[in-house]
Length: 239
Image (cartoon, rainbow, N blue to C red):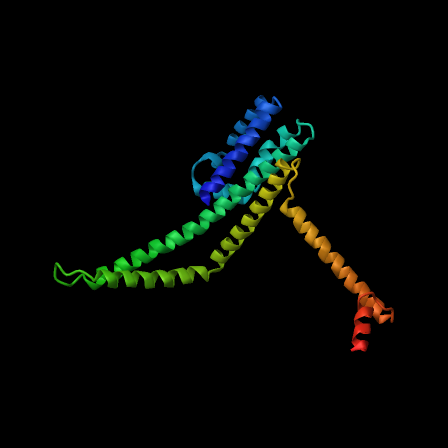
């Protein structure tokens, strides 16, 4: 999953690069913005997860802010809309990756703590026992599983973990929606029925059915026979 996300991110980055350098002859302005990004957001390229996390807690749309000035130099077009969607998606993927790493680190730290806890328990238990006597491997494993389950249950019950999980799920949905929007933008000229169009159709049909039902109820209350309902009544009388 992370590999797929990285592949999508790399493709988006390549799309943005080609748009400015190949299609619109804005190489000079584009690279100037990249250099400006490195100066304004040095933590973005530090390789330090904590610093990148801190950056995105202060500025949510790093790529959006970086490319906004150069995008203003491009005339409106479908290609421009597609690249704008790609830049938004790059920011969303970055935010999502940070939150996902937070979740993974919390679980990793908890697992590490369980190993340290079991190691200390058995070090204390066997410290006075004669040399050569070792704990039973199965017993050691079972104890580690028990301690891990207890610690992970405690972690899952914390407000902090619940908050990170909720934010991760929310950002995951944002990434999905933005990716669908980007996909539709790229393939908008092809004879393809998109998911959003199907969902809109379903919603329209649902709203129409609801409206018809409400109108039928109003007509019935006013003593006006409704086609179908009147037919049902006639059949019931014949029986």
